[in-house]
Length: 548
Ligand SMILES: [Zn+2]
Ligand SMILES: [Zn+2]
Image (cartoon, rainbow, N blue to C red; front, side):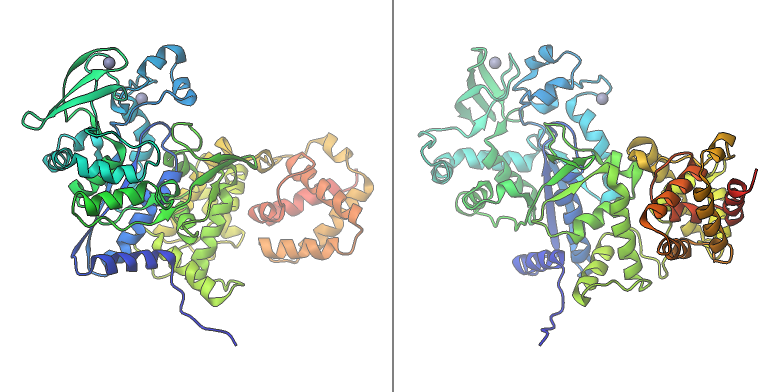
């Protein structure tokens, strides 16, 4: 017997857990965190942006007021990893910034005020395309805010309680008595990873230190340094009243950093810690090769700015939302059409235009994921959907000048578009064409680059054997009566190739690529032919198969 259970999307479950945990609180404050240590890759959109935003949507529908905060850890020290050093013209000289706060490291390309602003741009400037609204704070700002200072004071007053808790998680390397959980900034060498705190004066809000790197000693304002990292995370929760915060899987291990922060919150700082959810990393694939997890300071991956050049933000949102949070995903810019196809399929299923060959619960999860991946209101009827690979073909078969108008005309003449598109459909076609154009220019594998032969070079015709010509001629006859669209072209070709031998079928494809593209191989040909004018295709076949 089949057990019927109503499906619940994992994000709906996360939202339900939050509501249960915070009961009647009207406002829910969600927080994400990122260290701007280098390349701000799209893997970071997964938990800190898309997941939170989808949860937000559900909570708002339930009448809650939701804020989405994002903390950038800009007081963290710059580690000077190889990839970070290589960002500079002179890597050797750049090693002098090791141990500096990220916010103090200069822009290696000299176009922004500092390292953080330079690398933040390709992520921060596109946040609004991936989430409704995000309030961004840097830890540099936070340490100057009264709410944070209050927590810093509290921690220093309770430093023995704090130490006892942290030592539970430090195994054989416990912090000694009188440990001060604060990293001062050295006023001489500017390192934040080297100055040893000696004494705290809460009155003046200063800490006395001696620098292990340069030997300098002084008092440092506690606005300029930072808390020990476990305490920093906990302090931010308290200062910003964070109620929900997802975290990368590295924090999720039992007895790991999140557990210790929760312990600190409850048992030292006396507040209810946020509820969280762990998520897996995103790997970076190039040319079919997995280069490992995307990483900021290792500069592995690509940015949201790169993504939106070649695909809609909703496509990536959908990919993250449909996938279980603890499943490792990979992304490859050369396969972008694949993610777009998954998204388009979900859209057709959502509108009931296509029945998926899947269990009902799976189709329901697709629909829910599609819904949660939207940032704009969902139209009542599905706007026209231009397949990504069709767009790839159109931008290569039509002149760049007046591309949109020509494309619409072509889509109509080839029966892909049945009526004049409404304004939303037009803007979607326009967007797909532009993204496909960029993709071809930037990432498309070689087989997607095909230029149509506008005229037939004479030597090409003579390169075909008489058997080639026979095959093309027979196919041409079969093409003549059919409706000119991808489906019927594909069916006709399959019907024809089933009547000839395998080697003849290979000959046919080779001949087709030759007469249309001047090369012997290429991508699936039916969608290309469908994008061309039927008479033009038939004329080309006639020209190449005619005598003389
Ligand atoms: Zn710059
Ligand atoms: Zn120093």
